[in-house]
Length: 220
Length: 220
DNA sequence: TTAAATTTTTAGGTAAATCTAAAAAAAATA
DNA sequence: TATTTTTTTTAGATTTACCTAAAAATTTAA
View 1 (cartoon, rainbow over the protein chains, first blue to last red):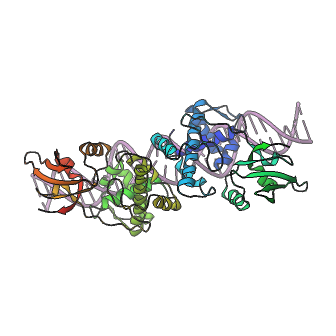
View 2 (view 1 turned 90 degrees about the horizontal axis):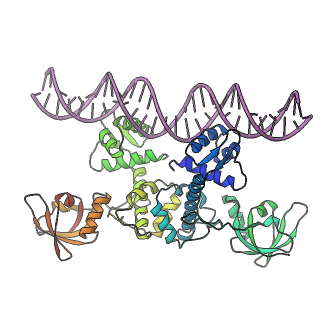
View 3 (view 1 turned 90 degrees about the vertical axis):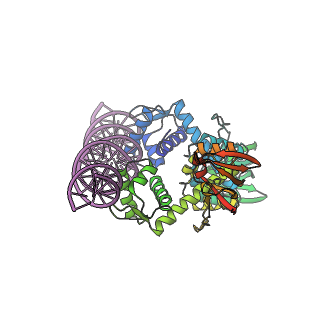
């Protein structure tokens, strides 16, 4: 890998490919905050270099080489997030932008020693798994809170939105990783969910519930 | 500040300005490993932005703004070096290149928290002073080992060469920061210096002696 | 103090990553 | 299936940081 830009494209394509087979030009453009025309240029280049397969008008898919490169960037990003939270006392809503920069530092030794320094963490401050140095990581089985039924309970183990606004909101509601929750009721009117957390009953909007990931430990 | 390149130019001009009044185009080109014509382009840009004063054919000098920007980069570089050595067990000869990348990460919060995490160190692994967050640092009074006279003694407190080859060589000779040395003899033939260190007598070349910095604690 | 050498700048060009506007292909819809 | 809409690509520019070659200014030396 070389440029920051190429790395950012790869990472974004990798994440988009988690949900769809063929990643579309427009989707990439939106994530990269750039124009589709620019994306076409770049995906041609990444295809030339063997990171993705590209068929005109059909979108792109990752090659093995591309996937490995992307996982390596994701690994760096998440390790740096752990560093920022565990060692420098950043809040979980403050780490994303800095990690976006740190993930591009090119030094295998640095990342391996950082991993060791942090005690080989398995997940980052948002619950996302950290690939090991061979790119392997557990495919975690999450359920979206919104998909749970009344009476279901579980543990908050991740979030699918990393914006500062969202994370600060969760923090205020006490919805942090590791907390136990139970579904009390689902409101027909607005789809909001009533949950029990730390012996209190609170109501969370459908929008919030969509982005909280639960590892279920008991179904109704 | 914006681009890595601009930051690198500023840092190099800052260091060159420590030894001369007017920093010359060719000197910058050599340090930046680029061509004088490219330097002319860049110094015009940096002058436009107010970081340096530039008079055609007369070289450049730093403005207050430029100096502050450069010191900020130097601070980051040296703090990261301390991190790498103190926390990640890098050797002092392994840190330079990685710190060259890390110094460009833009986050004031990051650097302040890193500084605190490291215990507000005053100098980096090569003995260079670390500016505080206001850009202030002690102007250390070093003497080059080569300038000492027979019988003089002192403590190794810095090096003026950061190449891995040089630092590894020092390490092998036991010439590390904090060590006490005394000048036993200076060889007329090749200018090499015989010193006593850790009760052993060793001979170091003139070239090596030039780049070792001593804080004298006893003159002859 | 003129000539030679060195340093620096200008002029014109390249590659990377972007853009806008317009054309082409694919998908959705009537 | 023909038409409209959406998606994607092409064509042609722009900006940043470079480059080479040649011209201009400065410095050194005869």
